[in-house]
Length: 241
Image (tube, rainbow, N blue to C red):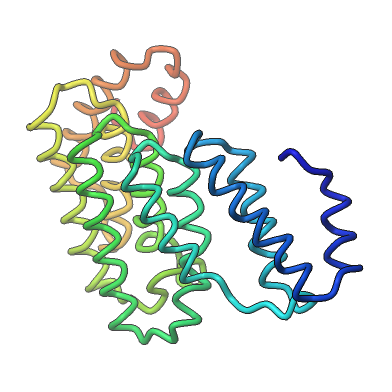
């Protein structure tokens, strides 16, 4: 990053608080400049998290920067949907952000809905973008994971989760109709989400479900033959033979 990290740490310890904060504020500006030139630089994003933690620290009389970091991810995603690091950073900031906002269950549900809307718009523009699918999966896991592992809306009941997940499945199917038939990541999402929906509903997969899974699996075998072992395992696990 152009400077010796141990020097910076010593500066934070040895300089007066106000002076040390100026040093780290300059570092935050430096890394922001780097990310304008290389928005997906993994190391720069990691360094930004280090700088933010330092500025928030008690040693520097800091306070939370969750709101600012959440807004920063918004700007970076708007500048480039393929920014995996920005989507990942957003997923890391959200749990703390919601706790600090003191959101109740209804507000958390509304927040989750808004995040789904954001990533759906991104997928409409870039349906082949792995970064967008990563974030979509992060949101879906907030519905399909057991209570206690969810970070956005932990108190959603099954009656609420089921229509949300069904809507996301339907949206992906619509996406496949609108775009070319080779959206591998869309088929993978359907293969994950359809069995998850059955589990949420407390039922076995229907014959219609299995027929769809067989069709999507056939597509994936053509699109990604190198992962034959994975497709074989899925076929056995879901009794598709």
